[in-house]
Image 1 (cartoon, one colour):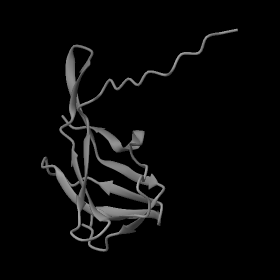
Image 2: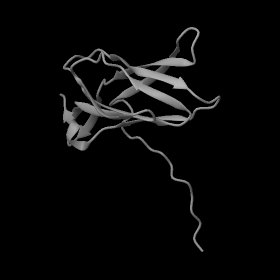
Image 3: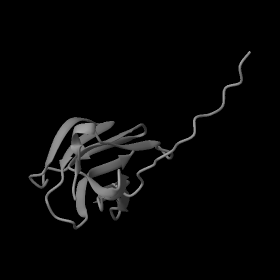
Image 4: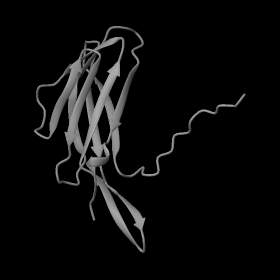
Length: 134
């Protein structure tokens, strides 16, 4: 019988995009405002005898969970398309503008309905959304 080992996560391109999510408590409630910061400095890669810089043009951010209610914000910048949304899942497709500054976004509000609420964030980048930047 073969031994199965846990998969190791390996990201050979850690500088292409960065995501920080913050939950900011709203006073006198069981709700938190969901704030996201996306950075995309790009990453230099070796190619033949030179280098190229790759960058991300778009990404999809998905939040899923239990033990709470997710509400979306109606005040979104024009470069964010809201995808599927329910009380336990939200999906936003982000088209990065042509600026090097980090994107600071308010995605919505999370209201806890249980003392422990497991939520997961996933940032997905499709191959067609990666491009040569320099």
